[in-house]
Length: 155
Image (cartoon, rainbow, N blue to C red; front, side, top):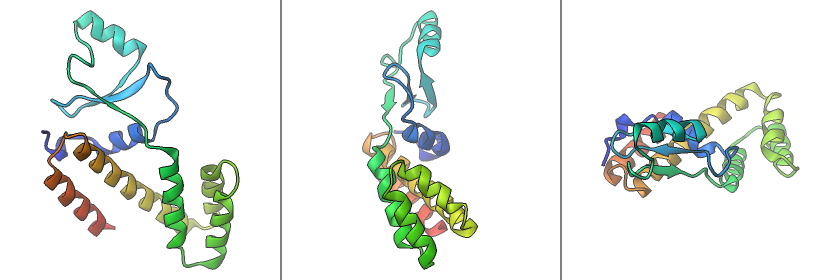
């Protein structure tokens, strides 16, 4: 197992949120170093010339979180908004097509809530990243739980 502090949680969050890659291009984590890298045609060619493969290293493919998780995060955030106009506009935004885009568009009218959303979202995604690491058996579950408690206390 890796110590949690060797893993770049911001990069892991990016990997967990990236749904724009094709089947042959993906993020992966090296279970020996904690390094997160993008695997694609160029990386595959380089690795082949060096004589290794992701699978040879025991690489763990990082699958993006389901889009419904993002929707639930917006719902959870909206439930905590105490300003009625903001809450109503955000709720309306997520009921339309392209809910995330409309949600973030509506937030521009409420700068304080916009900042709060990005802080909320970042903390939530870091928590998901830590849970993912624990679920994959890459970090000690006790260390993961302690890190999540610390993350929640900071926000």
